Structures are given as structure tokens and as C-alpha cells.
Length: 57
Image (tube, rainbow, N blue to C red):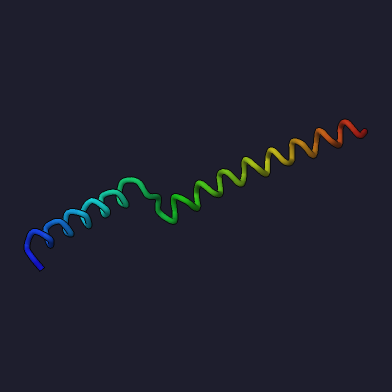
């Protein structure tokens, strides 16, 4: 393989690594995001259950 091809491959690999490092989330970051959103959804559901109970009563 020519040095030019190896250089281009290396450039692509470096670009992909930079993209992963800068644009992708870690498992811990995703778990935190999921937990926060689940809590918001649970609160929203609880609010609607409460409103339904008040309307029925």
C-alpha cells in the first residue's frame, strides 16, 4: 500500500476519532439523560393522574 493511501486512511481515522470524542455521548452521560427524562415523564403522568382524579371526584 502506498504511503499516500496510508496517509489518507490515517486522516480518516483521526477525523472519526475526533468526531466520536466531540459529538458522541458516553454511557454515563446517556444514563443521566435517560434518568432525568424518565423522572420528568413520571412527573407528567402523575400530574395527569391527579387531574383525572380531581375531575372524577
